[in-house]
Image (tube, rainbow, N blue to C red; front, side, top):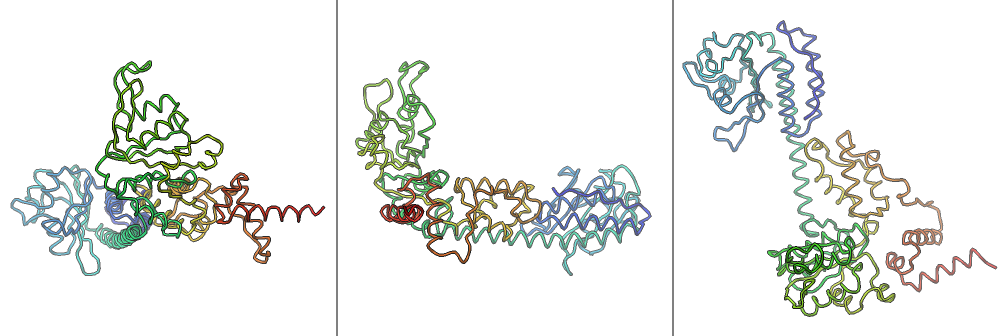
Length: 511
C-alpha cells in the first residue's frame, strides 16, 4: 500500500487552512497510486486517518454484483456488520449508504442515535454507532459509489463543517480512481497484445520474434508430434530447458511426466542411481528398491541438461536406452523396458569432444536426430525489449505493481549490453531493477549493468576494414580464442577467419 504522509486531521471547527493542507497531502498520496485496489485501500485509510474515524468502507459500482454495487475496501468491520450498515433495516427509512446513492447528497450525523431518519435503523442500534459520515463518489454526472465512515465509541466525530472537505476529498478520490482504472486497462490490454504476439511468434515461455528465434519456433513445431531425440545446443542461460518443456507440453506426450536432471551436478555413482534406479542393498545407503528417472518418466520425456558431462560408463548406458528402450537398475542383472523421449542439452562443442575421445560418436548421432541451436541474446538484440517487458510483467506485482515500463535510455542500455549470461541474466537484471526502481519507469540507474559488458562504441567515420577487425577481435576474445565458436557466431567459415587473422598479423608485423 502507498505510504500515507500523515495528512493533518480535520478538527470539528473545519479550519480552512487545515483542510487545504490535508487535501494537498492527500492529493500527493492518492495520485501516486495506479493500481485500482491499492488506490481504494489508500483512499479509505487516508479518509479514516484524516477524520479520526474508527471504521470505514468504500461501496463501489460492480457489474457482477446483484445490486450493481459492492464493498471494495473496508476496515474494522465484520461481514455481518457490513451487511447491516449497507442494507439497513428497522423503523428508519433505509440505510445511510442507500440514501446517499439514491439522492446523491452526503449524510453527516453528529449523534446518530437521535437522528429522525436513521436513529432507529438496526445497524445504528445494534452496533452502537455514535456518528456517521457518508459522501458520494461521482464521475462527472454519474454516481459510482460511496465513502462511508463512522465511530462507535464517541459522538460528534463528524460535523456539518466537515462537509466541504469531505466532498472535495471524494472528488479527488473519484478522479484518481478513474485514472488508475484507465492505467490498469492499458496495462491489461498491453499484456493481452503481448500474449497475442507470443502466440504468433512462439510457445508458452519462449519469447522472441527475431529471425533466429522464428527458426527455432519452426523447428520446435515440426518435432512436437514425433519421438525423435532432440539436442539443444547453445550457451548457458539461453533457455534450453524452457524449449525442452515446450517440446514436451505441446506434444503428444504432454499427459505423461516431464523429468529434468542436470548431468554435471552429481558424482557418477549417484547420477547412475538417479537415472536408472537401484536395488536394495546395491550399495551402502540403498535401504530400499528405488525407481530411476527413466522409469518415473515412462511414456513421457527425460531432459538431460549438460549431457556432454556424462562419463563414458553412463554414455554407454544412455545409448542402450536410445537403441533398445532398456534400463538396468544398479545392482540388478535383469533389464526393464521404458518408453521415453530424450531431449538433451549442452553448451559444449560435442564434435570437438568426439575428436578428443571424450564423447561417444554413436551416442552423439542418436541424441542429435534433431539439432536446435539457441542463439545467444547478443545475436537477437531485437528481442530484448520484448523479453524485458515479459519479465517486468512477471515482477511488477504487489508493492511493485505501479511499474509500467522502461525509459528509452534504459531500453537502449539493455540492447547495448553483451549479456554473457543471456536470457537468465536479463531476467535477473529486470528483477533487480523492479526492486530498485522508485518511479513508474525503470531507468538506467535502476538496471545497474556492469560497464565492462557494454558493446564498445565505434567512431562513425571509422573505415569498414577497421570496424570488421575490431568486431572480429572482440568476438574472438569473447569466445576465449576458439576459432570454431567465433566463426559460427559470426556466420563465417573457419577458413575465412584464419585468412583474416593471418592478414592482420602480417600488417602488424611486416618484417
